Length: 272
Image (cartoon, rainbow, N blue to C red; front, side, top):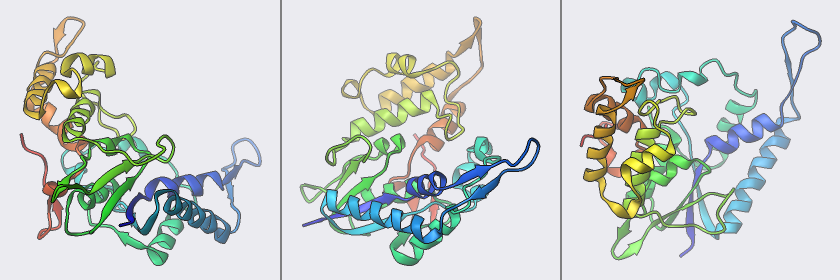
């Protein structure tokens, strides 16, 4: 059986629209003017990229996974209103929306209200029934390491492939996925605009949690909460607790099949 690609389309959409745009400032104080090649050329580049992925992974089906286009409708904003506010003043490349529309028109796409493309991939990958076959999440986003490889009827049905780093698809164990998610809960993610626990970077997070083989989710969650409760600055306790940790854990968690209400079509925030 050949593979089904679940493509994180937000990344190539941004890359190909940005790399083909040239912003020119005619004189000091003037606004820049975007100069772009014909859209058809950019669309051809994206088509070639997708075709190359299909050949590399021996896939005969491609599913384009897209994000809710209205940032304010993102379900994580209801958990953390400042989520991704660091991007709100960033000007999108001119062809970004047009490329998204092009992919929706020419490929099989999945996009659900309030969900990010990451969530769409996570749900499709971990549900055995929506998409049949061997599924490969294709993404350069480190957040996708929080999606575990699931076993159904004795067989692995989903893998992860980072085209910038991997030579072949790889499995992510449930333990590895949960551990990395708890690491994200402690470290935060400046790209996505959530802070994690103050003054905790990768080293302190590893010191707190140990390695993936050293524990399990309930243990790691207790250690995360303990780290928040004992967070200090200049010798003074910051007064953080389980609710602060829970906000960060919820926004850091990429939806798996069990985190989505298919009847209401809405995400289910994680509860310990």
